[in-house]
Length: 90
Image (tube, rainbow, N blue to C red; front, side, top):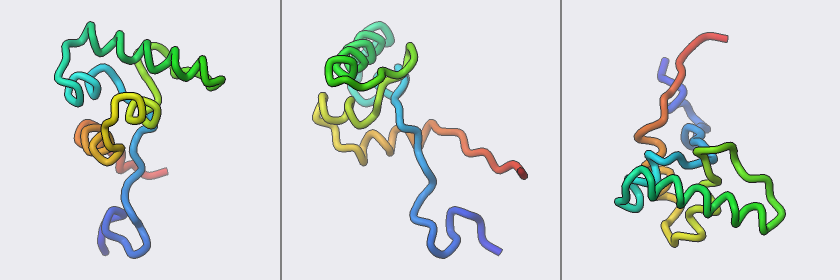
C-alpha cells in the first residue's frame, strides 16, 4: 500500500496556518530581530481588522502573504520544507 501522501483523493498534506520568525527570515532575507518586528506588525494589522492575532512569535500566513506581496504558494513551500510530519498511530 502507498503512503497517505500518494493515496487517491489526497490533494496534499496540510500546512501550518502561521509563519514563524524562521519562515520570515527565509522569505524576506532578513535577520531574526527584523522577523520578530514583521510578525508583530502582521499581528497588529490583524487586530486592526478585528481578527485575533496569533500568539507571540507567530503570525497569520495569509495576512503575511497579502501584506508583503508574496504568493501563498511560496509561503507554503517554505513552511512545508520546515514542517515536521507525524506518522504516528492514533
